Image (cartoon, rainbow, N blue to C red; front, side, top):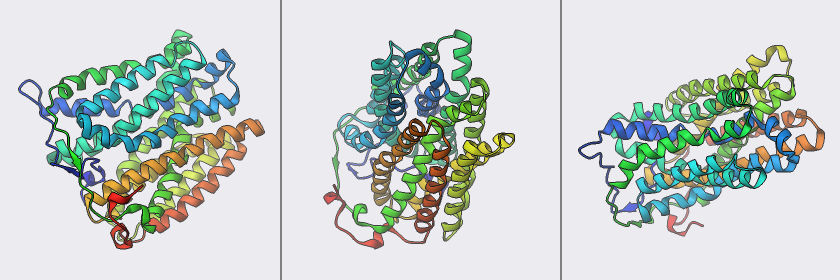
Length: 420
């Protein structure tokens, strides 16, 4: 399997088959590549930037712990709620224009967040979460469709752009706050790169001709497959830890006495280490007939690293967060790799991807919710550390099951057109 095969095309079942994006006489294919990567660079700043200045925002607005939990949780929940809508929007308006609309909505959401107090934070965060859900679904397919001849390179750049987004938000938001003495400027800054990505993509999107397409219902139902549910549970548990890192690792470090700037750097380095894991783990996974031990190992690395970051000795904080970063990057990557390793064709893979995103992100948001609730109830994060040990163990169990050499198609089931 090629590295680019982990990019699942959400338009795979459309008829007639979508044509590649047209570069045009004045726009090269390299321009399209840069535009898509710029879109990817904006997909996680909404999560990590808020976490970086959470203490300052809370102090300035007097937000109750429950409101903080909502702001940290709902954008992740929306990834699961809006992801299933993306293919339909693409069939209606075209994937390029749908992506443009989502990027504009993301920029507006990030710009609205710091305007005023609580209402603006809620509206902006919700809009950004909905926009990211759509981009999450469409961007991999566009990369795969338009760069089949450079799929390995573009897959690597796409993967790194997602990690870079989280690292940039974690590492630069608090320094912006320290420079401006304004949490509004610190959060509002991230609307600029999102707007820039939308402007760069606009000439490509607006020149595309689009004919409405229909959906061909073929293949087995992933919703009736035990293998699909095991893989989805694996995805959900990794998402519970992944988005909790973005939302809570910086506040956790600050609760342990780390200053805001240093906490941002530690989180950013941990996320950068995710890049290494996300590049190495899939390459190893595809060479193995059975991925059970690999899935279990990276799940336990992630849960243990997170727990030690909460209550391990502070002298080893860089080690704990590094273990967390390497584990989380590997865990996320192998969970996505299971999509193509547990399916025989791209049609089934696309449906499994939709199931994993809808259920995985929806359940995954529970992780950020529970961290907030446990912190509010106990006044600390120790209980959350125990929870991550349990989640890591659960992810190891379902990862071992998902790693067995079985295929969704072999589980039987009705036609995908009858899926819920």
